[in-house]
Length: 219
Image (cartoon, rainbow, N blue to C red; front, side):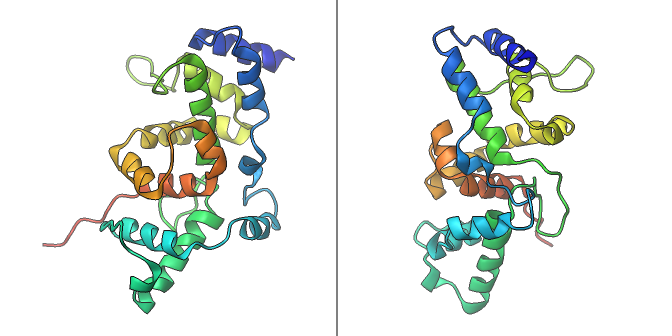
């Protein structure tokens, strides 16, 4: 009960009206089942994800070209070489079936923060408060993220996310990048919270790809 009161107060500070409050709280505290599928829950969950999300060859080809820094809207699986197909399958396996940790590359071990869930909650808060953009700030001189929207978001995140606020902030900042917007356009991802609920795995992949820095070309 105390947690719900804190959440309500945080949402009121964001400008969420009384008539929108019950639905907003319900959406934040009981997210769609698609967002509960997470590979770090137990060893069997990855198998569940594989059974629910089938391998899309053409989408994998698009992701591969995007990851290589040469997006091609007309690329298809048949246009990839045999070696490229293997690399595309590896990228898909990493980004779609094991994406629930905030990855920078396929070799690193990331913290246990689900980008899709963070984005979903952030967008629900924006939609309920009538804002186009999720905003947060920091104290003058630096410090932890803060602000009404940030407080509302933190209220609904699981404990492991609350203890890694910088990872959460990084997800939000990444979602503001032009690169992320371009990826979403290429992958056919919409701007609403319901779009995230329908395609959480693809949003995770887009966040992961948007965070990766392209290697500098050698001169």
